[in-house]
Length: 71
Image 1 (cartoon, rainbow, N blue to C red):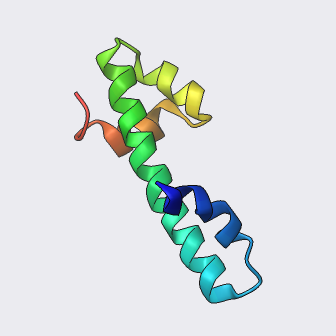
Image 2 (spheres, rainbow, N blue to C red; image 1 turned 90 degrees about the vertical axis):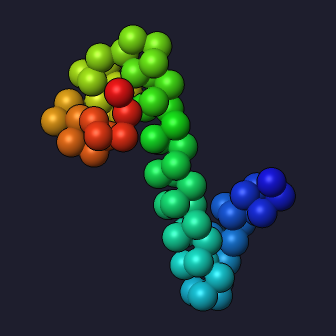
């Protein structure tokens, strides 16, 4: 867990190798968290439209990205 907590500091590092590596790790973490929360929302009865609004994207975008992974 401490590695995740340290990522924002690493992302701001002056060494591009450290900063870019942290940005990539944050991007991967964000994708996993988003999938988890979309699945939670769908399990809780949320519509694709409601999820899209919460994420600030279109219904088509969120449905295309997740409909095969989340039922």
